[in-house]
Image (cartoon, rainbow over the protein chains, first blue to last red):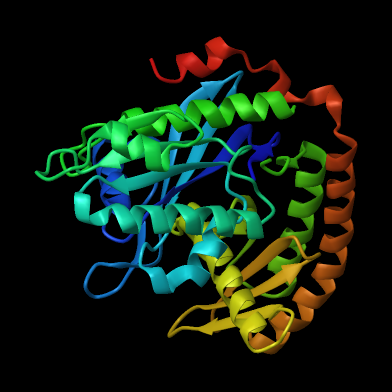
Length: 195
Length: 160
């Protein structure tokens, strides 16, 4: 749920990166953190296990600029991708304004992508959201690896609603900001519509 | 459909801040924060300059959400008070008016008993203010809706 603060003159929104384990959600955030000017970003919080797998969430606040004298800030969260952390994923979706679904393009991760996508729909449903009405985009990550599924195939399976989709290699940053910008725009347009 | 925005107006901001300033003094605490359940900082008073308020807000909300989930697992509705004890500083976290999280950080100049007592009193006042804020939000307070004024150009310009 976005938070409009007339006193501090701020508009705050929440974006969640969703996707199967090891698809690169945290890597997206790390790249954004690395490339954002110090004054436009807050601390990146990572709640991970000793083996650097996300345990609860990663969190990165960024400031995008001003609209009509209001600072526009986005809080970026990732969910833990591993299947058994489902209870945590549900909590992180609370109050979400926009979603980036990160898919792992490798052939042998297709089942995991589909499972995670269905899990996202289910968890959104439980929170009273509907994927048809919430701003979201899809990122096909790891395009730099061999053995990836063609985008047309991925689209057929994962992008049934025809939302904006991006090819990415989050490891070197390809497509990371393009994906973020796209969902930020969708969220702001949705906010304006609801006003 | 995403839920409608949580809105903080100047008048209620001042009201809420006055209440937590009073709590800060009466509980002898270091600092007091008000955070909404989704992790957005609403107001902060006291010795806040060395603390990253944005991280504090999001972690507190995550903490409340996680303990709320834990409560459900054992058949409780929620745990409305959390307390973390550190070597120097302690954190007292409580849910106010079902919507907002009150965070009090204190050291040896105060005590858990005093903080609990003062938090209880302040919570009553905060609940009233929050209810007022929520009903104002529901009424739409259309006279000052920034969202309506946003143009497509404004959105485009953010990225140039």
